[in-house]
Image (cartoon, rainbow, N blue to C red; front, top):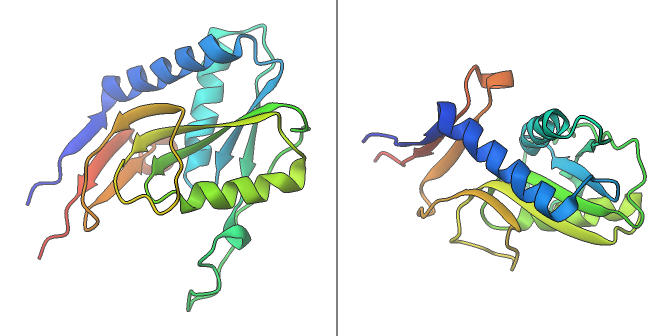
Length: 181
């Protein structure tokens, strides 16, 4: 069975630019806002969005950090293999700020719940928003929705959405993998 490419090349870049423009509409100069990428794959999205925003708004100070949620996940004690945490890198205050959390794929919502728990260690934000490059829409376990969405995908549980980043995978691409039986 063919694994369809949902987004790649120029359309991938246009989608990121559209998300940046939506953020600018709501956050103006970002003086009261920060970007947080959720480890492991949301950090590439957050870094790319921050880079694009800095290009679009060269006079603005865009703050971007990485958040590890390993020990905040509700399934971390259920795994048989030992977990290896990622790195949290937040070198700014989030107290009273508007936080835009970013992840590559929103599916069950469990990652977002864990990220909100982990974020509390850094202060109490004024508001938390969510930006997802891909919203799988179905199979939510926790009632969350993204404020900003790159693309929406209707998929079944046996399918997997894979986001490739040129920084780590050599190209920007989103593919829907089907469970071949």
